[in-house]
Amino acid sequence: MTRSVFRGSRRTSLALGAAAAFTVLGATAAGAAPLPADSHGAPAASRIAAAEDGCAVVYFDLGETLVHTAEDDSTSYVAGAADYLRELRERNIEVGLITNVPSEWGDTDAARAEALKKEVDGAWTGAEPFAWDDFGDRIFTPRTEEERKPAPVLWERAKEDAGDCVAVYEAETAEETDAAAALGYVSYLIGQPSRPAFLPVEEIEELADCG
Image 1 (cartoon, helix red, strand yellow):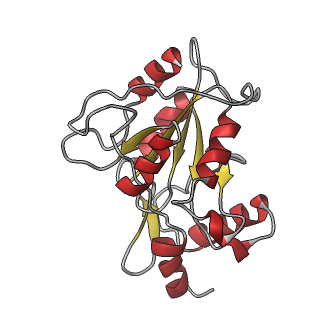
Image 2: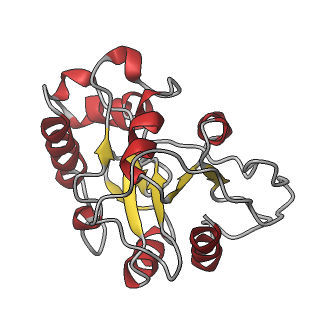
Image 3: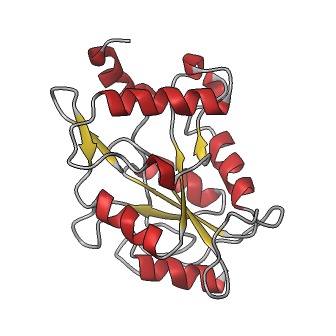
């Protein structure tokens, strides 16, 4: 796949865009602190890091949420994203990706994740590499074209993986964050001038404690 073709997939097929409506289960878009989502599903796997009294898993869309694609097709972190991921890592808060890629990129979840990594890394110009290790196997991509967001399947799969932990979704388009909120996520629309670029880590820890 040529870089110019991948540019189209980054901005469309990958839907490397995500939304985040601060409409988090009743929170106001004006900037009120989000309320915790109900958590459902089987107990979280042991790899899910627990906060003091609970746990949270923060899922992201990729393009224009964590990764920016420039006009020359080069990729790098969105401003502030590397520091934000580092802070989550230091606080032992687990993270994951929920992103659209072409389903033909692989027959398995792992194969599509590897294809995604190669595409992003192949055009990467950032000062530090993308923190793939932070995400482990929590990279959720469509197994069929019908599963592409805004279809609910990827969010449902990721929420099941989060178990009893509070599930957070951060992205740059309201369509997706609204959809995630409707499925029980705490959603946050990033990059808004009236509030922090990303959901503050302290609020995520509070949500975990309340969850």
